[in-house]
Amino acid sequence: RRPKGLSVLVESQPEEMSLPILECELQWCGSWSSWSSKLVACEEGALVSEILLERLTSCTDYNLRARLRNAVGWSKDFTEATGRTSDIAAPPWDLKLLARRPNQVVLECEVLDPEGAPITDLEVQFSGKVTWGDVYSECSASASCWDWDDLGGGPSRKVQVTV
Image 1 (cartoon, rainbow, N blue to C red):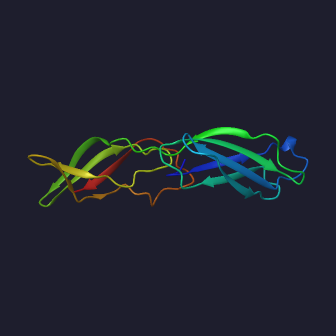
Image 2: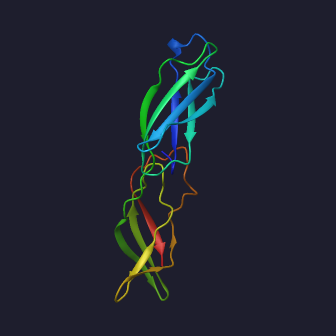
Image 3: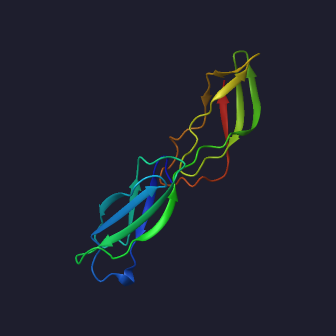
């Protein structure tokens, strides 16, 4: 999963290959859309091709199907699968006041990164007499340290916010 995208691995079966695979076709559609298609040239001798689908809709299930081509032609059948783009983040929890200073406070909370879409910022609001209002804050949650090829969700993490 990726933010608004999917990384799809298409694997050919070595026992079924007498000629090298030249090309892979990946097709996809969401629940309310028609099929889209992407052709990718395969590296010589590669048994696995990774195809990145971008500009998809977040929080959406996709039907996927793939087929391969060798020098003789395209495979008769498609291999089918499903995938889902990243979901929105759950609200933070276990909010604590870590420090109070004359002009700021430091808060800490626990967050859980959705698979493929790490939390990059937190919005802090304060309670006024009538409504809630936004307040400027700096957050230690950052995607700059993430390895975008390994976004497995994982355990929750602590994040600090200076307000």
